[in-house]
Amino acid sequence: MAVWNRANIFNAPVAFAIVALFCALLSGYYVAAYEGTDENGYLITAKSLATKSDSGKVLDDPNEFVSGNYVLADNGNYYGKYPLGYPYLCALAYRLGGSSAIFLVNPILAALAVLGTYFLGRAMISSFAGALAAILLATNPLHAYFGLSAASHTGSICFAVWGMFFLWRWTESGGRWNALLAGAVCAYASTVRYTDGLLILPILAMVAWRYFRVEAPADLQPVAREFILMIIAAIIAVTPLLIHHWRAFGAPWTTGYALCGESTGFGWKFFADNWWLMLTRMDTGGLILLFPLGLVGLAYLATHDMRRGLFLGLWAVPGLLLYSAYYWAPQGDGPGYVRFFVSVFPPLILSALTLLCFAVRARPWWWEVGLGAFVVVVATANLREATRQLNRQMDRLLFDKETSERVREKMKDGSVILASDRLLNFVEFAGDWHLYASETFDRGAIQNRIKNLKDNDPRPFQRRKAEKLAETQGKKTDSELTQEQRDIINHRLTEGLEVAMILPKDQYHRARGRLGDKFEFDPLTEWTEIRYGARETDLSYTAWGLYQIKPHTPAPTTVPDLEQQIDNLDAKLRDQRADFDARYPGGQAAWTKVQDMERDLRDLREKLKKSTAKKPPPVSNAPTTNAPPTLTANPNEVKK
Image (cartoon, rainbow, N blue to C red; front, side):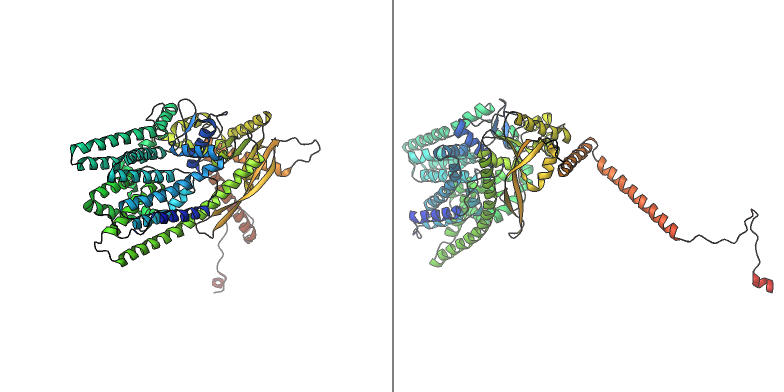
């Protein structure tokens, strides 16, 4: 198949203009903040690498907060379960520009991915097709969304695109630098996301293609030398990650996913459950109007251009099949599931464009105009969805940023902060504090965490962490957990540390009552969170507060605070009910039914009494003697 040169009217300045517009789109929604458990695993690891040159986390208190995607290793330290390729880049940014520079890494990688897609499309098809491919990726809602997140998907797509670009150049013309860069960049992609190790398939295919296409035996030597350079570059790129595995997990090939059992979470049974979800979500939430064209394009290339078909097919299809067979497949319309497939968006986009560019042999001018119009339609639909998702993401990140700044402003390093693990996931990055999750002292949350001990299925939460949690906290009642929380606060106050709690204002009375009258809450600051509902106009507002906890020292003449007494009694009642439910499962519900039946019985008896009291007693003309009553004849019959 010849390269489509007719429409080579787009050059590199056009590509940089597309990248500039993409950066302008991101800048309108950029917030230097993050949210989520996954993001905590990446950025806290990066912060540790930048400040301590070590990714491990050591706790002063076993009850201190550890995010859900950290794993407990044999050496007693906690490590993020993710590979270190993306945290290495964030750590470098932290050292060069401070903590805020970390949040520029993904936008830069996203822009580079758009640029790389242009160059790859130009190399494989034409400048025009490369520009169209860059536009389709730049306007893709998920690419923009993850470009402003702190997850690793943007790094995955960036390194995959550039690795494949250098591989294609090497396939076309050889060259040591192409071989070195293809090996190094593709290997580094696997240190960002392990599953990008599948890029070895198109690499091997292109090496085999060049090997079998060599006509003279003397020409094999350059191919062999360049392939060896590719291998050496790849080994150098992955060596730091293998060393980390060895130090943290005991062996170079042992990953954090293996400690969770998630490396075994791929199988046919999962594929049978997920294949339709993958197809529908890729067609709607992933590549709108492009996904089916991409699949047809791969089939077309397989029969018309074997080299391009192998290159794009072995890049896209294995990733699609692998994550379709993955156990973790959240439902819904958000990015939760489709995010696994973003690194194969470029080959599917290029396959669709290849089909549209080459399927029609005689391409009149109006065909090219129609192709451009089609891309405009897709890009418009993409931008509409992208702006909707970016608006929601920005509001969440603004809340995360404001929360972190309020805490950073009021609490100095070394202080103690209690909050939900949702907040601690991003608050942890803002300072150096002792953090305690409220879920650590909630029996319901604990039981939810340790329920994976009932089976051996792969789960995100590490089994060893669940076993430790079950051993230390699992058998405690709510009353005991409440007392433990009080003891920790009292101990930290005795050490001279400041203690504060972050909670919604409508939970203030419950939290104060749970701690009891030995402590008092001093409000330090408050702010508001905005949340979207199912529709853009459905907004809800939550007022949050940061409260400093101090020992309560009432004056002798102080009148008892009835509100405080109510809060205390309400908290005790909640704990007693929870303890009763834990000791006698279902007992409270059964007793409630008994009480309801007793109440119904009392009501019926009261109704009977009332109805009896209103009815007049019967009048009787019978004699008062004990003789049996006599029958009296009918008066009419007597007269007769």
